[in-house]
Image 1: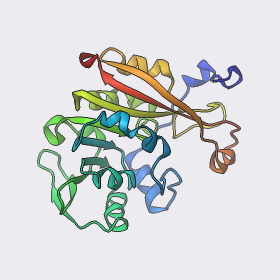
Image 2: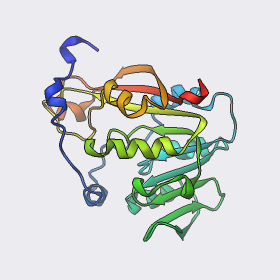
Image 3: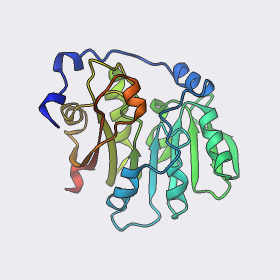
Length: 243
């Protein structure tokens, strides 16, 4: 990253904005969902094989999944997909827009939670807080695609979020994590700026991390926020036990 784009450390420490689950649900109700991508994410398609690592029919987790079309893409390849989002609207729209038949069930162990399951059996989307997810509920995963989860959770909740991710990773899990970089003096987030130092602090004791690519992702949306640069960085996170 160019030195002129380096974040101000003091400003970084002031990322104190907090969004509630209700705030996220209201975004869907009001259709304020510019964060949703109608196409398969280019970084996911480019680095999917890095996640798969020549494995077939693996279990892939989509945290804060919304109605990501990427889920159907990899499900159609024969992989097992589990997602979680607090917004029921998003999850139902996924099945409806992708024309996938599904059933709705309660979730033992999580009060008031629901899970929407494809009748084909390889897609299960949980409607609950990400912090209610555990190995006991969903098992462990061979892959995680985190395009908009880590950058969406409140900065004050990152440690809690990271512990959930770490707890559901198999020893050979390959976690593709996308973070964003921009001038945080201009935008409060989300998406929130996440530094490499933050990732090292949160994941480094148990995982290795490798930056796979940094791309310029500035669009008219970010320009509308007053930004002149916006970058996405994709990381491969793997348990140290597998190194």
